[in-house]
Image (cartoon, rainbow, N blue to C red):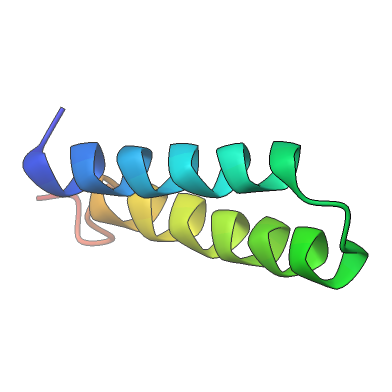
Length: 53
């Protein structure tokens, strides 16, 4: 796994830990959105090249 993916995974894990410790629904929803954005960014890093190269 590349360094950027490692950093993204660590950030996602921090957000998941926050979700487990808080009761504020807005904060939980916000972290879910951030996690989804980070997962999309991670997928885009290793997406196949549209030109097939």
